[in-house]
Length: 274
Image 1 (cartoon, rainbow, N blue to C red):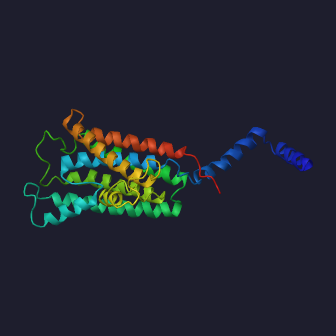
Image 2: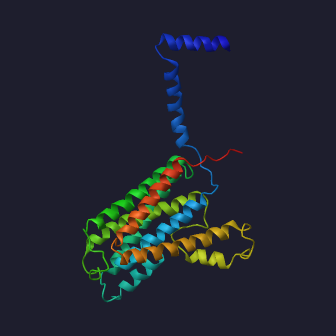
């Protein structure tokens, strides 16, 4: 073995490679393997509880400004149905916003789910890129509102009528929420959909271990954490709408949070092989 190692060194020297060159080449070879690593699920539930906070922030300010949701599509489906009878009368095109959000979410879910399955749902690279894209989409929408390209302030008249430019940021935001639920499902946290609460409320109420000790029922704790996070996010979003920072500030915050999540996935511990 010593002779083989010596021969390899001599060959490397003859070809003009130094030890540092060989070390760099070895590191470059390991780099793709790092992004292909399966990340650990330990404490990863905290990421998705924070995702619920961004849901509350975004849905809160979008509903206050445009009368539709961008993640909770049950409400949008009802609004779409009511639109057939012209309800609400002061927002004749409200159903179009809801339809745009539903379509954006469906397309986003399809794209993120398809790509994530192909790349590996729990791989470091998959999660990092997914949250980086989500962050980018939220920040783009925030930039549109920040530039006052579209009426959005509560100080203005209700944004209704034929302001079809509103559909652009709504579609962008709904699309990226498809990536959020794809990530939570891909990591195995089915109890943390992060974008809907009806099924979560049922799961909490019907849990046979509902009153178990604080550390005895992790799924219950996660569900309750998600509910609290969405409510807190909506409260913050509501106050931001009334502030000088206006609704886009909630989107800037959400985009920054998702950017931090992308960085977190890049350095998240790898799963330990059994």
